Structures are given as structure tokens and as C-alpha cells.
Amino acid sequence: MSHNATIGTALAALALATMTLAGCTATAAPEAAEQTPKASPAAAATESEPTPTAAPAPDSAEPETCSRMSEVVSYTDDWRWERRQPLRDLGAREFAQGEVTFGDDGAPLTYTVAAGDVEAVIVERLCAYPNVASLNHERYVYPGLVLWLTPNPDTPWVPLHSPVDAQAGFQQIPYQEAITAAGVAVDAGDIETVRAIWNDTLKGMFTDQDVIHAVQQVVDSGDPDALRQLFS
Image (cartoon, rainbow, N blue to C red; front, side):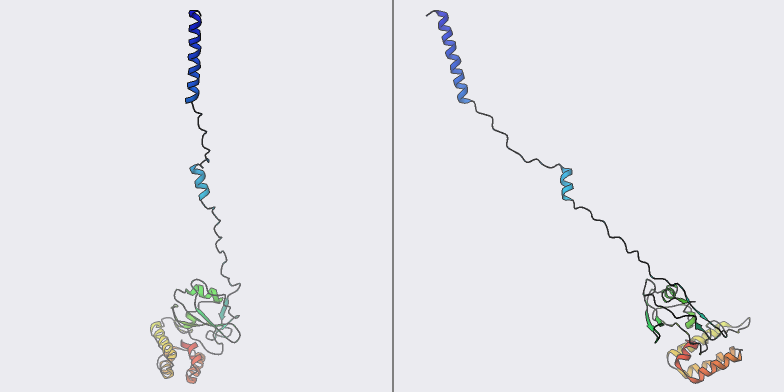
């Protein structure tokens, strides 16, 4: 064998050995583990947040209002009054939460003022006009006050501030104090004190003889309801 053939044979053997060694040591690359894709932070936040629901619409119902107000009028003179039409109770509302009593005809008879009540709202609730405080010889309403709502036209009524026929320069304060004192006596059932206040003080402040006679009849009768309308 020639020298060149010997070298070629040696190189071939070396190459074969190298290939065999590589086949014994090389390993296949492991397959990548299958992974579940992760949601993005924005997507996760969207999935975790509850779907907003629409807020309920506010109650837009307004309290019922009067189509017509019931006025207190005098068809004969200025000291006998009556309502033009019956009152209605449209129901309790803010600033008019008081209790209403009713007469035999179903119309409101009295109203007891509750805390926080406002006279303007009370009359709106009852369809009453004008104000009900002065009708009850009061300057304003206050909790616990019982308001009589419908005057009896057969019974005289005298105002709180001065007689209807008062002349210029009339002294209102003594008159108002006497009316208030008579009202307190009526509420207490003290008829004799009512009579004394009328006969000794109030009677001399009136000049209309028809009024004096009508009031005197009520005072002499001692009728609590008629006296209440007069003074309380």
C-alpha cells in the first residue's frame, strides 16, 4: 500500500469515529412546554369589573295641587264668614305634615300643626285661602296649634288686630291682649272669665251695635264652639 493510500485510510477512519462520537453525545432539544396565554392587565381589569347598571330614575311625582282655592267670604257683613266651597285634603307633604280631622260631610274640619310646618304649604295642602292663622286669632302657626278651618256663618267672628269698625287712632294693643286672653280662657273652658273680658274690656271697644248684640248673645249662651270661633 502506498503512503498516500495509508493517509487517506487514516483520515476516513478518523472522520467515521468523529461522527460516531457525535451521535452518542448529542440530544434532541426538548420541545417547548405548551403555555396558556396570559391576559393583559387591561383585559384582566375589564373582566374583573362588574358591568355598571343604570341608576334608578328619581321620583319625579309632584304633590297634587289645588285647581281652585276655597276662600273665606262674607256675603252679608264683615263679621259673619263662610267658605265659598268645601276644603280638600291633598295629603301630607314637606312643610305640611300635620293631622287633619274631617266633618260629617268628609271635608277637613281641623288641622293640628306639626313641627316644621309652614302656613303657606298648609293652605296649599287643604286648598284653603286666605291664611288660616288669622282666622284662628293667631299671628303665626306653631307645633300643636289646632286650626279650625271652616267658620260657621251663623256665629259672629271678630278679628285679632282690631274691630272691623275701628276708627283711626284705635289702640290695637289693649284690644289684641284682650282677644288673646279671651281665647286662652275659652281653651281652658273658663266661660266666666270669657264673659268678664268681654263685658269689662272688649265690649266698649266696639261701636257697631249689631256686632255688639251678636257677640253678646254668644257670650251669654256660653256655647264653647261659638266662643272658640269668636276668640280662639
